[in-house]
Length: 450
Image 1 (spheres, rainbow, N blue to C red):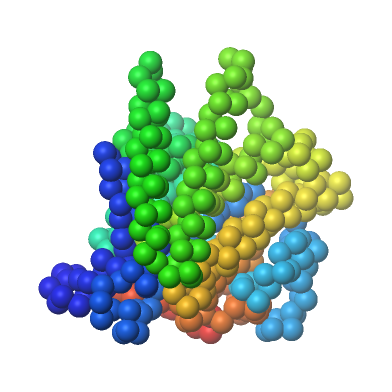
Image 2 (image 1 turned 90 degrees about the vertical axis):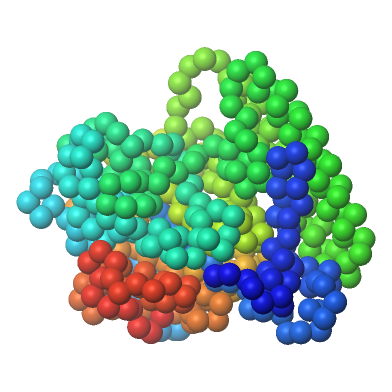
């Protein structure tokens, strides 16, 4: 889209303002009181719709996760009660399925197929070599059409790092298991797990890298960011009270995230040169929440409108000692109806749901136009397996949060008949983003009634 019309160009500049300094680019939230003369009197344009996909691994304790009833009067389950305060902000969609996560004659590999098909709805070619083949994911379909309107076409996050080669699950390439986003049939979009690198990407730094000059570069970048933050505060002096408060909250969030990253880096530097065990108390939760903070800033500044976040790859055997579950997650997911294993799976489910609740609260507290970021977002939370013991790829645990700019009606449970491709939901989401797509993977049509 070309902004040849002066009014449109003025509006675009007012909604997406940037401060620049020596390689730092600080996106600012919209401040209507600082818009050019004549713009403030006009009705503000509707904020853009954003979408994010959050992935959880290994299935759930189905009996404790799935609610009962449907419509607005459905009953929250034991696990969903941890996000009950946000009940009016999300819909539980029951009956979605990923058929191409099933074997179809290819034997084992359900975890690799679950991750691979989650956003593509496609069958992964069973190979551990370089000849990987899958399909384009819903986020990248959107990025190809609307990504040019933002500085970053899309943002890919993870807590598990990047693996795009090697053998992982039963003869499937690690590329399938560690990547949610696929730009094409053969090209995964590697996610970033380092909050520092995400921070630098959002605010225009080059990679800090390693080596003897890394500390010096980080000090220089910090001083430049201080300068840019100071300039932003001078801008705030010309804003009205509401915009001053908005900008102050935003700048405080930027500085807080940077300081948290610095503390994490300092703690990491002091660790002995040994392999740190998974599930170290607080670290995993802090990692996720720092990433959620960065994702919120990315949406708030319209740096991107499309994101994926793999909370953990399917098959992850992370332990959760911090919540009293020292066992590996994947190991106990094969519970064989053992009551104690099911109890522990339920604890892990609630741990992840609490992180979702934390993220939703963050989005809800962030003003966006006349509503909040959550009002103008569509957040899909779920995984490619329901019951981990049976590797069941039907009846998936799926939550759709946000109002999609007023196009979604949350606060309900939708129960679908039979097995409905999850890609049908994605088609309906793309439509709300203004993205044209007739099909995604195995989709059979748009999911109505959401």
